[in-house]
Length: 386
Ligand code: FES
Image 1 (cartoon, rainbow, N blue to C red):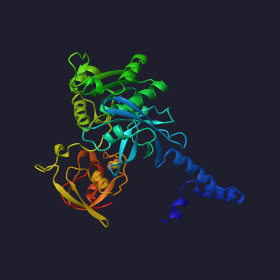
Image 2: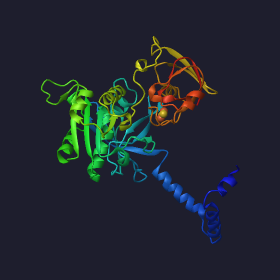
Image 3: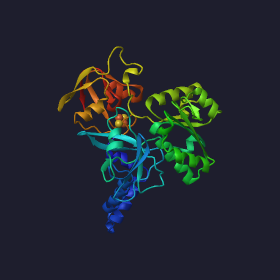
Image 4: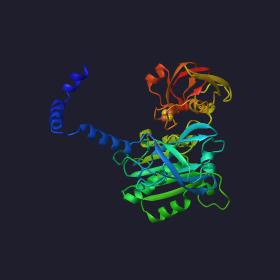
């Protein structure tokens, strides 16, 4: 059916067009109106934000909160739990990483990003050690589906956090405290040692001040005199602290290994997957441990990636394709870097790729050779189209 025919069957289309023609005849400029609406849409959903680091707040020996402001006025609104993707140049490599906003959505003058330095990491050490007030950065607008949905998630919420995975939790807690929404929120926060706990003082104060909140710290390598919960967040601890779990909604945000272990523990205590919301946190740290990885293939095995019509570069099978493309100077749009948003979709023309479960590929993508480059690993020499 031609476009004209489709429009003519839309209820009210002809009447609206006729009304617009009448108004235009009387001097109303619909181009101006369209530009005004588009301007508002761009302000709410910008493709890129130019931000300045206004403050760097030390949280723990290995983590900092970066306070980011924008000279162009109030920042776009977001829902507590969402992230922005930060574009940076580290050692001459243009790359990006997503970070959850830790400030409350009621704060429109700045976004706080709370970053923990990952041992062996590429971007997080640079952000924690190298970024000073006054530095300029670019980001996407807020994105992501990891937020409290009051209609579907109910009013009894549990958040399992690990490391800097507490960032979206503190934003949710600050939001609930500000809006006084009638919910219960139990944060169970795992850390290696007591001085790794981010927002420890604020969490204690909020816990004491608000009935809706309870905070449990779980330390895996505590000092001898530590009095709280020890070990890891597992099925036994969940049953002891959260029973009955029926009807509760659980949010999960930590390192990939913790997310996987906690998801298994939640299944073991009978929480259905649909009640569990997991914020993916980057590609698997060691893909050779993922189910389906070819036996005996070492992560440092070399491969060549050819970008059709543009050139070739060397990488290793254990490096996500997107990281390798960044390093070689090829730009691919991206946001979540965790297999969720599909922005980094590229086509594999030839060669073999490992897609871990994080990839969340549609069946049609798998059939026609599309992959999410952020969580795809080149198992052989490849040719790709970007
Ligand atoms: S960047 Fe979102 S799926 Fe790869």
